Amino acid sequence: MDFQGIHDRLKAIRAPGLAGADEPRKPDPKDKKDKGRAGDSFVLVDPERLPEFLEVCRDDERLRFELLVDLSATDPSKDDPNLWIDLALLSVKFRHRLAVKALVPKAKPELPSSVPVHRAAQWHERECAEMFGLVFRGHPDPRHILLPDDWIGYPMRKDYEFPKEYHGISCE
Image (cartoon, rainbow, N blue to C red):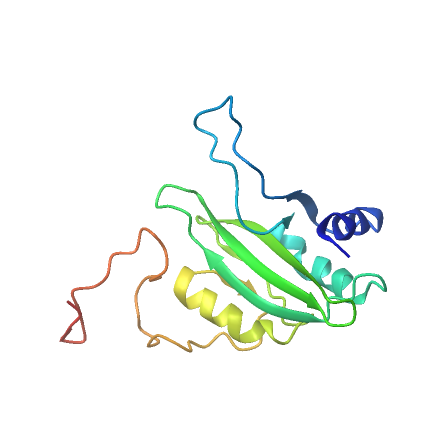
């Protein structure tokens, strides 16, 4: 199934949290500032409904996205008030993929954990928590996996200022 077919199916079954879709497009020749959009097609989902959305994608007979291949985050710019949550789903049975995105405000970067739906989300969510400051409510094991427990800040955010030293060790 192609992206349009997947999106149509999600709309037909009223997938919870589905907020829209975006596909790559060429620049508008009439608008000099419009650069178009490259990359993959994706669906936009309400972050509070993400686990429900993933469950529907996994369990629907015509979609069957059995695997969560990736879950990551992006901070587009220092001035942007949101973080992007990016997920990649795969249906082994039907050999199709789906990119899913959700916007989470930097001021309160919280969303429910997707681990109850896809166990593979566990490590991905832990990494996003450490690197971007995301809080995944209901995560079964929120311990750090990359940084020391007393590390201050979130290194992958655009507004992060790298420390000059850590416990007397120079970081420069």
